[in-house]
Image 1: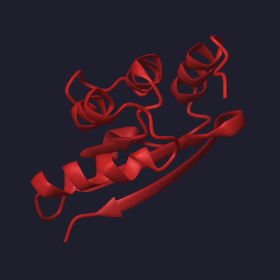
Image 2 (image 1 turned 90 degrees about the vertical axis):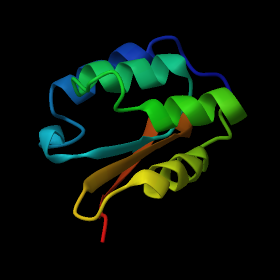
Image 3 (image 1 turned 180 degrees about the vertical axis):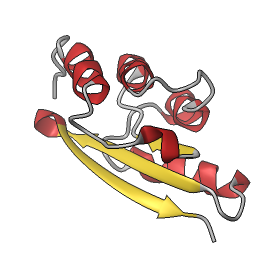
Length: 108
């Protein structure tokens, strides 16, 4: 599978314009599929996230690389180990053709 170099810019634009998700400011935890550094940078920029918001995604990418869409489960595992009750999160996974799936979650 080959990812077009246009994908990060398109992703940034879609996220920035709100086409992808409403109200990212209401999310404490981000579990983003680490499809690559440029994808994580695009999500961070598009949603205007603080630099450490995707730390778990960047750590999983560094340790394991991109293991396709299921990589987000490894990110979720790391996030949940440190999550506190009451925090709200969003998991985002990307797949072929730049399909995207999101899931909101709440830590109990």
